Length: 354
Image (tube, rainbow, N blue to C red):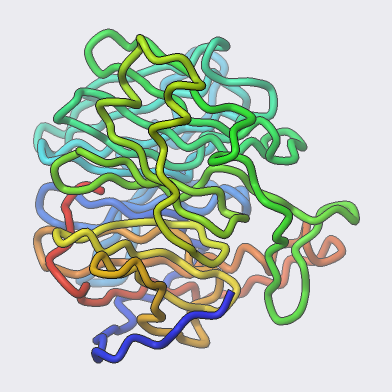
C-alpha cells in the first residue's frame, strides 16, 4: 500500500554502524543498547551489548550464555525477540531452532547482573512450525504475549498464533491459531521489484509485530504479510472463560497498514511500524488511524525491530538487510557491512518497555 508523508518534520539520525545484522533492540536500566544479532545470518553471538563510547560489542549477558553445549540448555540458541521491563530485566525470546533446545524466554537482570528467570515454551504452546518472533512484556497483568509467525522449520505461516505465558506460574496457552488476525494474507513482500520467495514459493509470514498501550489495556498485533492491524483488550485476551468464537467477536480491526515487521507505540497511542518494502518508518496516527510515512532512508534496508529508550527519549530501529540473505538470492549472501542502527524522536514520548 502507499501512504502519505507526515507533514511534521521528524528528526532522525544514524546512531551506530556495526559489522553484523541487528535484529531487535532493548535497553539496560542505564539505557545501554542490548540487541539480538539477526538469527537469519547464523551469528556466533546471539545477543550483544553495544558500547557507544568506542563502537564495540560484548556478548550479552556473557560469553557462556552465547555458547551452545550438550550438558544443559542454559544458553541462547536462536534469538530475535528481545524486550526490557521497568525492573531492569532484559527478556530474550529463544526460538530454540539452532542447536535445537526447548524454546524459552530468558530474563537477565541488568541491575544485579544475574539470571532472573527462565520460562519454557512446552509442546502444548508451540508446534513444529512455530517461530516465536516478538513479544510484549506485560508486568501489569503478569504475562508475556508472544507473536508466533508460523514459519519455523519450513512452515508457511498457516500455524501463526499468539502464545500467553503467565509470569507467576509459567503456564502457557496457545491462542488464535489459524485465525483471520494471525494468518498472513497473500500479499508477498516486494523489495526493489522482487518478491521474497523460498524455493519458488512466496514467503508469507504470520503474526509478527506486537505491542501494547501504556496502560496495558489494548494489545495491538498483525501478520507481517497483511493489510490490517488488529487490537484486543488484554482483559478479553486473558479471560479463559471465553471460547475462541467469543474472543473473535471482541477483536477489532484497528487500521490499514503496509507489510511490516516491528511495531511500537507512544504515550498518545500513535503506532510506529517498520515498512521493509520502502526502507521506511511509518506511523498510524491515533487521532484518525491514518497511515503516514515518518521518514525513509536508503540505508534503512529491511528495518526490523523498533523500540523506545526511556533514558534518552529516542526510538531505535535496526536495518537488518534480511532480503539480501542467501536464501532469497540463489544461495548468495548479498548483505554487507556496515549495518545501521537509526534513532528518531517520536511524535510523543514513547512508552518504555514496549
